[in-house]
Length: 359
Image 1 (spheres, rainbow, N blue to C red):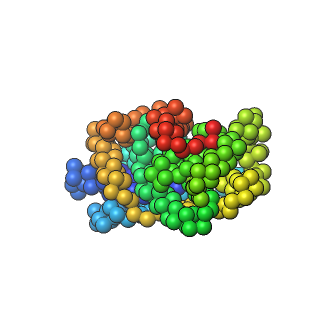
Image 2 (image 1 turned 90 degrees about the horizontal axis):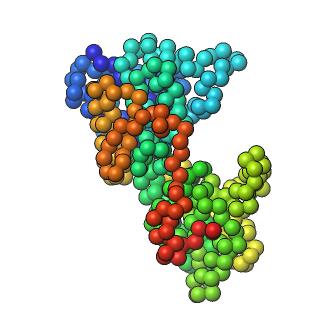
Image 3 (image 1 turned 120 degrees about the vertical axis):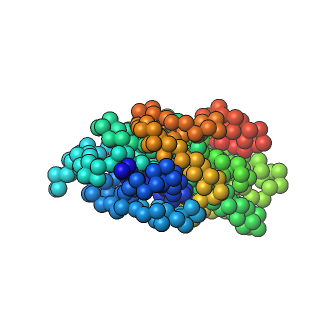
């Protein structure tokens, strides 16, 4: 009897259920009734607290198009994984290993982002058999060209920008659409280009507010009555980017606005006199059904993860590289962030059609 645990960890996104479905169907296809699949409830928290349930084949039926995760999820910061809780004296790593052994698992399948993969690698180093799949709307996991959830989030953010166009045109306003992405600007970049934004600000390219304002003034001079900015929540000005790490964190923490977009809006309105509004789609970008691409890629990721289990090839993430699904060592994935290369062809193409990055 093969015994496999599955958990989803970190922020939710589209495609989690279709990924769960794919790996389960592939395991049932190979092992028939000689496999038991245990759903770990609410991510690593469930693994720590031994909260799980034995899944049945029907549990994986009808969830291909369903958003969120049927297993639930939670955030368990990696930096606290080895910290013993003072009140409960719980050793998180020891408890996770205990649950794994209690269930007599042959493998643990983990679906998650960067922090999740750090913990997945930690468990692998502790002797657990782990296989993972790359999930995040930020598309910032190293070792894969794309993560699932990303394209669905791009569709949503693009639709927001599309809708903003009509009201921006009607009122002759400047609109800022703030997309998710603290450390990586993939989502903002793709949605900004697809939505026809005039300015795109991402964490990888510190902006100078004067350059942003010049762009808007030039558009006004050329008869354009409105402007649209796609701004990543982690966008940062050149002035702050130059500060030492500690002071930079302090400057960001002490921002006198709800987010960086509101600061930019205030500066634009003061400099141009043009009415400026901010729209923050927030968690809308994580919600709803996965688009066709995310259903497609999670099916491939899940099938590949099942093959790793069948071949007993553990300690790997399934990644997409040059169109092929390949195993990527968790040791190589953990702790690495895949940011937007500032000299990438995408950036160059955007600049060639006149999009400003504030640099």
